[in-house]
Length: 63
Image (cartoon, rainbow, N blue to C red; front, side, top):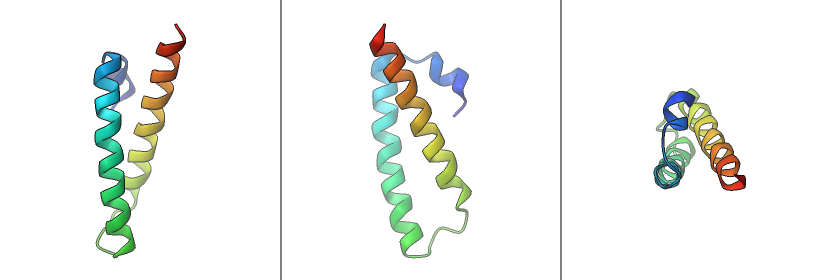
């Protein structure tokens, strides 16, 4: 997900997206542990998206 797309979302949408990505991250962790996931870069992208969402949420809550 691109940062521009995230900036256009409301706080509620960001929180929902964050929860969805956390569930997806947990599933990916299980796949990595069981060696089913071949493309580890997806994990890196997922972690980056989660960090971007948390940063945007923190900035918007401070305002």
